[in-house]
Image (cartoon, rainbow, N blue to C red; front, side, top):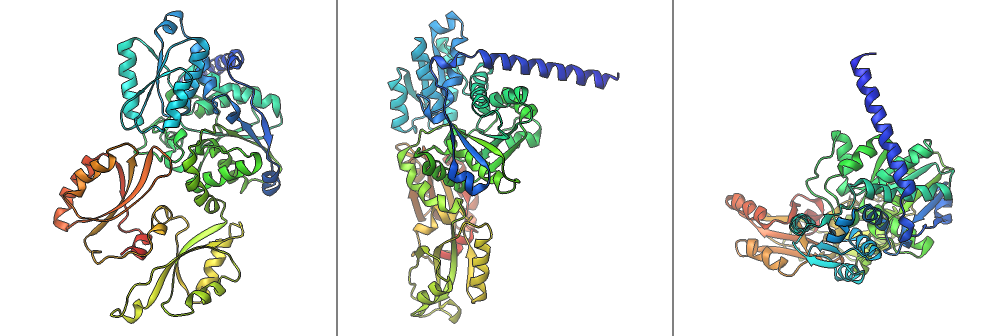
Length: 526
């Protein structure tokens, strides 16, 4: 046996011993002191539609409406007596905070949770209701996390990691143990991924007890830290993460979790915000439960998988949580039709003359118009080419993947010039609500999208940094009930001022991206 073969054998043996240790931890985890065995609900309508047997593992039924309680409790029961006396600390803006607070209350351990000041009041109140102390520190999770590390060290408290800890991973793995008892003939399991605790715990259990089961991780496209780690061969930091599915908005996969996932996970699927919204609607229509975005993530991945599988498989999605901010529902309802491919949105040019709208409706051949935005612009002195109205229109589709393409072809054959904005985030977030305003500063105007932290003074900071130095030419903001708001802003920037402008932009400290060349902006706002 060569030296390389000997090293491989040693590594394989160590991996097997590690897996057996996790199996033992999962089987012995006393999570049912505080958690319940959640139901496995068949989704009959969706099963019929997708040609598979689809089930939902209902972790929304836990006392804190999330699976996080399992891992937090299993960690606490394994602490030493001295650690329990000094108390525990964690940084969290969501489900980990509530799970740890309830687990600590059950065991009589003092818990302190550090949360960003942007955390919605409902989450802060829930944590306090379970008896934990809440400290509001920082404008982001990273600032709160850093503060929790400093507090824990100064006060000799044990820091409880939300996912990258063996006891936490084992606690989450009990979901897999229940699943096999409820549905032993499962073919594929879809698990949402943030830091990877749930996926790691479930995968290491499933692959040892029933190796033929496929385990698929599901990530949001804008926070795919597992996919990035798999591509790099190790955990890496994402430059930024999307915040819609805030329960999985993690910049870096855990070290412990990735070590398990790379051996026991069969693949990863990424899904868009619109696909998550469509999955939330599916969950509601089947169960009357409103899943949080991260909670519906795995069902969105399951649906994407079903578009290409052979059918007639037993598929299980983990509904990981249902701590939804009510105000987010408006945003979800606007986006779910797009995610189900039941709606398309376009920019269409029609003649600026009487009867054009009626003629366009006839061109749709009976399709329902879901949205129509138009503002007349005085073009008395415009060129002949400019005598065209640019409309923002939404149309109902049949749900077939080819339906949108066929509609585009039909309209083009009837002489309509159009641009498909169905996948254009700027158009869907902002432009559709701003039709009607145009300017004459297009040569100097620069357009940017920002993520504004939802805390008092955020707008003032923006204006202090940028607004007093450059003329603001456009501003649009909508609150979606999240810790961060989506803002579109325009500035009049001379070419000689670019260096100074971007220096101020960096000093602002908010996440941003330039959209000056976006077709939706060019079509409607210049």
